Length: 103
Image (cartoon, rainbow, N blue to C red; front, side):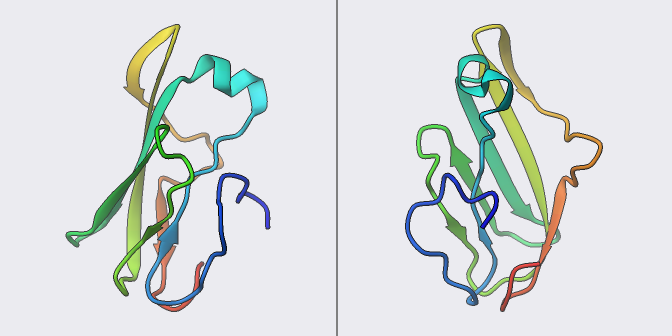
């Protein structure tokens, strides 16, 4: 499956939404970005989770929740202080998910 390079172990469908982070190796990412976090927060709800560079293989699982989730990425590196990264034009900073299958 594309985009699961950082995932260790099987992904199980159902029981809520699952999230993981994939950090692309393009443009020498590991040299330019030394610390990062991905925050995922349910719109209109009280669930949120964070995946960080200190635990990049972490998978987040909501407790049978579905809906729209906001995704915020923050990063820092040797040449820039911590900042919120702006999604590329083709990326969407929100993600829709059902409680039974990924979208």
